[in-house]
Image (cartoon, helix red, strand yellow):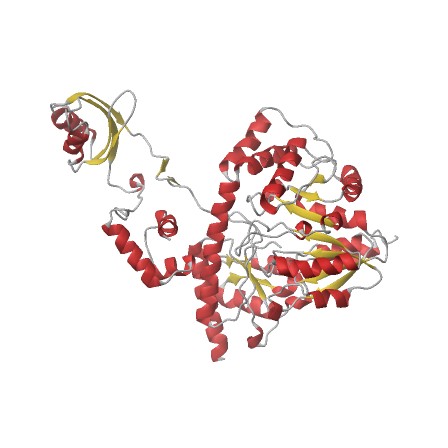
Length: 388
Length: 160
């Protein structure tokens, strides 16, 4: 029999989290700080709106681009929160999570041999999506000493004649790093000069703890070359609803809509109705959750300080990225040993790219009580390592 | 600063000074001083524990009593309210707009204890015109907390 599989997909490595997940999930009484989703339930008024839409029998397809009410609310939201205006009809598309938007944006924009610059450590799907779209991923290894921000110098060095897109994943999963306005201004200047497009993944935008998130699309000259990716999973604790969106130039959105139309048809209708309610009446919920994450963030930073574990201060998302290089173990070795000794599961930094070596991703989407126990366990563990 | 502290401890009164200080980015001394000040100013009126007594063997009966009263000249409802809330069996007393005047929450060990209180003590007060007693059959949610809710983490143990 012939090989039924595509070489492209077979050659893509499975997600680095998988192996660890299989082992950790078989153990009993494990405390996990490995989850990349909020610990809050979706606020009740949003769930209620989803239930109501089902009661009313709103169980049909929506238009391919999504409900116009929702697209209107998204435009209003981006204007209100990030000061960018989009045309609700031609510059928006509702997708199945931010992940679909990443996929179809890349597929709509690259040809074979085009290069897509991906700063890492970052979310696991950019690189495989770029490969599946036929592009060549070019990795920039972000550095601890830059607080895992992308610098203009690193970007310039990575650009070639074939560079088409820069993926800009901030606030960042797994590092929690953010890019502030002055950082973005330098990046924007290069993108305009070299005629490069930006895929700005802003799924964690609402979880910024040092002033409001700044979108690169708000910088003059950038809106016309930026696809903004966002969604409801992180800000409104709606991961299971699978709802995201993309905003950008009509020309690109039009082609993305074509792929979406053939592959997906439309995003879940119930989720779309719930999302309208989230944007209309959810600002207060977002604020409450953000305050709570920020408190836990400070709690963890203090805990690391007390145990002498170096960690740059992250100002976004709900992750911290402590530096474990002093222990002379790989991230994976450390994570396995920690699981073995203390029954505590964290994600090795290498799950998010080779440049995550020597670091761990620790999620604080957990209650303070749980975080307290977890920090005691880490402290015990590294104390023993240091004693040798 | 005060509001931040209050929001933080509202749902968890087991105040660990250090934890409050760390999570809010304040110094322990500042938090301690603010707490003391708010206690003496009567902003923080107590630190209570929310207990689901149904889960404990000891029976407790709760009742809501609607009380209609005649307000007194110069004192309005305050004096009669005070007469009522001074009874230790009374847990809370609110002045209410609408069909009646005072809403009284009380706790007793038996039905009889509560009915005796209502008939002997409450109804016999001079300004009380009438009372309507409602017994609580089951508490689902109290002080914003769902009683008996299980807090299991249903998320997968690890996700990207």
